[in-house]
Amino acid sequence: MESSPLPIHNPAERLLIILQRCSQDETNESVQAVLARAMEVKNDTDSVQKGLIQLLQLIYHIEDQLQYFPSRKQSSYKKLMEKIKYKLISLLSRVHENWLGFGEPLNSPDWEALYWLPSCVEDFEEICLSKEDLNRLREEILGLIQMIEDSKITQEFKQFLLIKLNEVLEALNKFYIVGYNGLRKEILATLTEVGINEVEGEDKETKNNISQKLWEFFTKIVPEKAQKINPPISLLVNSYKLAEMFKILPPGN
Image 1 (cartoon, rainbow, N blue to C red):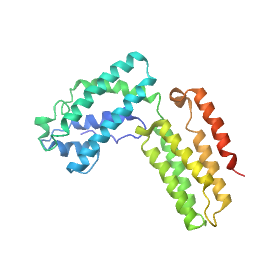
Image 2: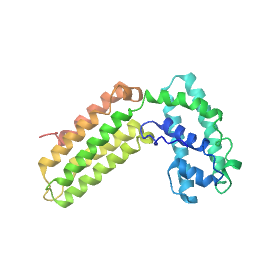
Image 3: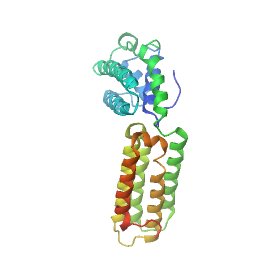
Image 4: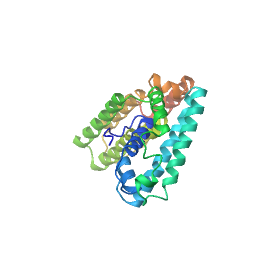
């Protein structure tokens, strides 16, 4: 059985690993049991069906990102995703059947889709954050969370900040499906809410410190890879909008 962890940076790689786990499972348990292991969800009908729906959403996200690939690859990968979707959908009503009898072709290491999907994974590496970069960003947010937890600010303000930072962390943990746009949107929303939030007794210095760190964090997620998804002119316009927005919140002041 494939032992690789499910990646959070590359949607195509996450899909590939789940399908590889399924294809290498030689037990004749139920389809539900095999899918639960592969997707890392609870082994019950509701969890597996929700997991399959989320897996289909992951494929829709992959299809949406295909627009950033050359037209030739867009066409071939689109057909590949359609095949995978069709086979996964066919399992939704068969979760209680035996895997070796009704999992075809997902229960076969020789399934054609598994041959072509790795090239899609490689192409996504060109437009995704690397594992290392994503881990570094997660560590930075975890550091901010720890800083807030250790601070002496009011409990109400602390709770507010922790909720907001954990929402950013959740977006990082689901980068494989939210992508750059979803992550940047979450950070912008957090920056805005921190800027306009007024809690009695809040620490202005801590507030500005968090705002500045979030702003620095935001600027780190528009590297060259992101330029392929967000055209430079779009980034420039967004930067001007941000500058206007944060006149109410000058970082560090």
